[in-house]
Image (cartoon, rainbow over all chains, first blue to last red; front, top):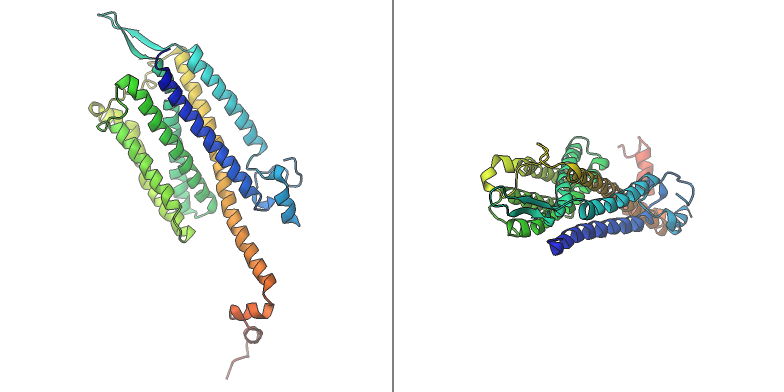
Length: 52
Length: 284
């Protein structure tokens, strides 16, 4: 295979950046979710139980 | 008490839902399949020169295009959504449009940055240069990225949130005018770009290469949808947390301050409220 270094860099930066951004969003969402009542999280399917 | 149970219920402290979790799993599977197709099952771009018989083409660097091209198309989609939502901000003036516009701009800028980086890495072995300042598509894409970076900077400024969101909406609508320039630049200025014209429109690629590229569109589209969904929810929660903290501060202040003192502080003394409620009071 040719250009292995370029491929690793390109795919690695892409997947790494997307993963980093996704994890950051999830963490920020968790932090914020703990600060607001359930009523503001309208995407929770089951607003009454803890297993949603 | 209800607030306490909300805070301790860590299992519920998430922006995920059943649908977004399914989408996330499907996206991860899709990325794995895309990786196998891109690196194992597809062939490198090797062509034989008809007169000299020499090999030429992109060789294995073509595998970069399975993410670079879909990332570019998803950037268009995200910024297009931002423009539609910005129109919604100006016309409807509801938080839903504002949060959507902000989410689309941020995710779009992540994608646009990756388009520039992956394009540059692909260009080094294929064009023998990391960057070409005279290339119209590169420059219009860079301008697009910088304009939306400016949009995101504007969103972070302090001030009346409604004013900031309206100004940001105007910036987004101006910035998005660059999108058709980026997309059509290879045809409008074909002598001023290293980029080739669209190979998809005339289906110059075929078989597994075409399938892998199409899968790239699908999977990167799923990545975009997942990120947009979660970024929207984070934005929604940011607004809710702000409203909630303001309401809590007011309630706390009311609890700490005797009613009489609070009324005096806001110019609503018992005497004045009696007077306000009595239409005859204060008359000569």
